[in-house]
Image (tube, rainbow over all chains, first blue to last red; front, side, top):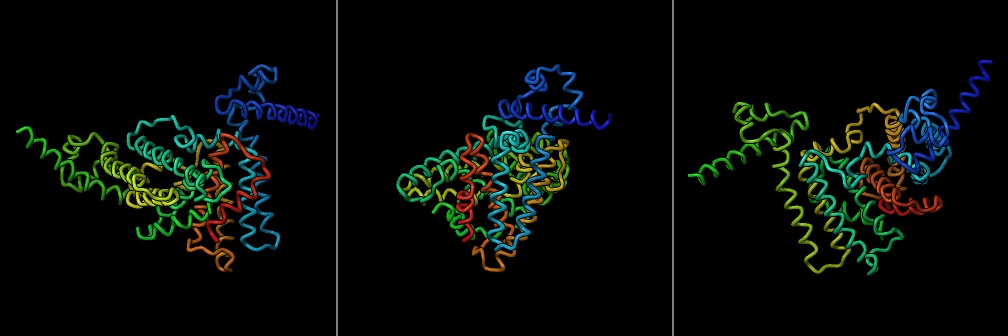
Length: 201
Length: 201
């Protein structure tokens, strides 16, 4: 009896998660427990019997994905390949993970990178707002130059202008992430820039 | 008289900022108004007469830097260069800006990217913690493979292993930043990976 009950509970939870995923993909972080209950034609208090709230639903949806991702990453290393191929496969698996879950992950990432992911957002700190302003100013100007460089054939890449901008920005941010533990000389910067730009030639 | 008083106020503020910058570079976000007052051998209430608090000090220190940065970015475009060279100079100026101000900027960036910049941090959300765990797991494995690929000559780059990892991670994150507005087919991922890896060959 207990097993049947347990099984029914699991089935119900799976049905809820499936409906919730659709709602979350469509409504993002604005989705409510009410929206999910409505989509399932159940009342909100019944929904709360199965899940304590949206964070628990979000977590249940991603749990399986994280698990698959970890297995994948470990499996890649088990085969005997060149290390550079292992790396490329890892990068592929990471990108596939983001590709498959981007709508759900954005709900999480918006918490971790609020100012980067929601361009209109302002902080109470003037220093943070000024930082974001200078960041966006530089991005606008760079995007213009990227478009012109692509049109004139100065850059040879399949990436669209936005993708050139954001991968470059991301890589620059990666450089800074390392600098926090120790900076090279300022004169090393031009050669770092050259190396980042190899992505686009 | 008023001008002299104004001038003295400015001089005092400049002296405070100079001392504050040293304290902030040394103590980061743990620095207090008390630390700064102590370094200047003045009492805290006098310090508050010149600056309402640490955020105002932080902002005053960065204000000039942001201004120089914006001028620089605009100047680069005024000369008639190939667009790709304009882009490289912009990347250089951005990196120089981070290079010169990383200690102060980290105080800001820690607010914007708390979980990425302070690896030990945990969130109350299980989904966010799981995301960060899978992120760090993948990073550890990739770093090992990067080291082996560099030792074996499979990657040809002047970048240290950490720099390869973080620029790759940043570029991957840049890809996702674009995907939030529209995803390509999943089958496009391998060619994106190849293009990112051009940085390291």
